[in-house]
Image 1 (spheres, rainbow, N blue to C red):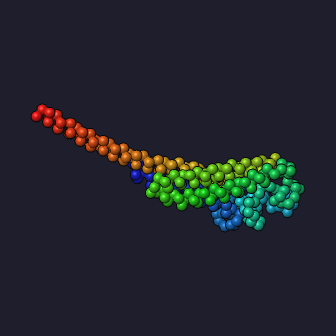
Image 2 (cartoon, helix red, strand yellow):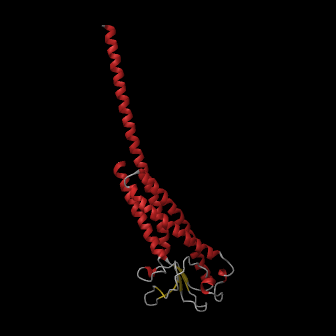
Image 3 (cartoon, rainbow, N blue to C red):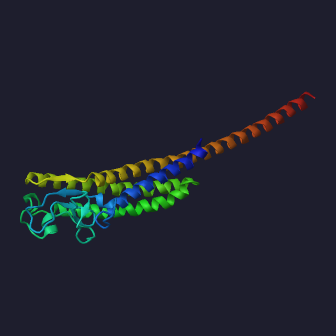
Length: 250
């Protein structure tokens, strides 16, 4: 069972890692590419009609703040691409007028979104390494354990990014609603982010199982060889003893 099970587990893990990477790319490209299906994805949408010169409603994506196309509900009229775009309405719109008071005088949302951006990219980097090292897991125990380690690192940072993202998105929605503005969470990016966490968790477990199964098989072979060797030695000793008894009687 261990022989064929290891490559099967490794192959399944590779599919999970590839799936997690795809979901991460869907998230990271939001706001940077305004084509289907990327233009459907956003973290938070809120009515910003009380804020001067702001799009209404406004959508926060990974790289830009976008408006909404009324004909199809997709992202439209996105602003310039900003690396590590923070979620901080006073900074985003350059004014405190019409901004819910919970966002004023605090750096919490700025820091939450900035660290989310960094952790997301770190997780993407280690997931890409895990995808490459996972090819070694198809044929070796070392490859399985190495892939498990890199996938676990990707899982760790992806889970941090997901937690930070959930914190600022949910609190941001609640703050806009408390100010009498409509706000909603982008279901796609929320789902993609946490689904990537699940993919990396399952892949880590499966890579470890693949390496362990390979170890059990090799240990079994060693035990079998040792048993055969002991039996051979025992047979030789018994034969020699029998010969000595025959000589004594003679």
